[in-house]
Length: 432
Image 1 (cartoon, rainbow, N blue to C red):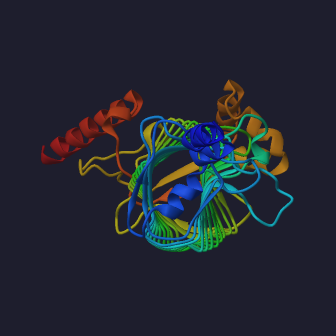
Image 2 (image 1 turned 180 degrees about the vertical axis):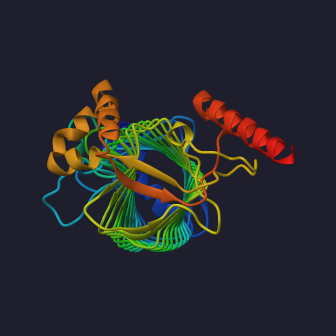
């Protein structure tokens, strides 16, 4: 009888023992058992983190695979190269800021890894690249925690990491959407960042490229500081509003190319301070409170072929002398309804240089709260009164401005017609 009972116990032990539950939740054990360069297929269930990957493997989840951390560290730490993780939800990283380690849902310490089709929730940082190079992060969705945004981490954090590709990611409600710190030669394209502090935050990072990203409803679209030779091309900066908000901030940032971007309804489209040799071409700057806020500490900025339209102030030059130019190789900018000039030879450009004037720099320099009133009707009245009293000052001089025929006021057209008739009559009188 005893032998029979012992046999039953041995037979059913795995189904009732605590070890069975342990095996069920131990993703680390499954990873350890997967051979190098092998593939681990996960089921539709929740696995327990925190896990460490120390060999090249591929981990693929199913439609509802979740990896849940302990809340005390990184949910996934990748310490080997050539790791691929796809199709999983990762949640519940450590959030303490009192340790030296900055925790993340996925922290990468190695090179040549691929992270794709991943959703991240309830974590401090989303994905953190720490001295990690040549990695690909794409189709990742990072959802910030509820609560004060300053107490959160960043969606994608790139630290001392070069030659990475970040593409097609969506980041909502984190501290900074993408943060670059001493990170060079990275390519960032087709990402969507909203409701963060800075959609893109740059510190001491050079030679990075950004294409077709969208930054919406952030405190700031892109804050580029102490960084050089960055390319921003085809991005959208939309509805980044607030007294200190901007589409793009350049601060101690030099030799950057900002080409073909759209700036719509930001507090400022450009805020440029202590920066030199930046090149802005072909940008559309529409319905912002300030198109370009340019401080005197910034020198040798070039604006060419940009379209300014219906901003409260197109250009605001502050803080003293400047040495910037608003045309390049005979190509100026489009100034919309701000510009009233002739194009008698019909070459699409004004017959004389255009000077954009404003008087608002005085109240902005004297009172920081003046920004709060830029969207009130009294501002235009203030400008008009100062224009009549000749109190306005030149904010920008464009030697080759474009003529936007659709925006040319009827008074200008009428004056031009009268002058043409007068010239023709004068010539006819000379012949007689």
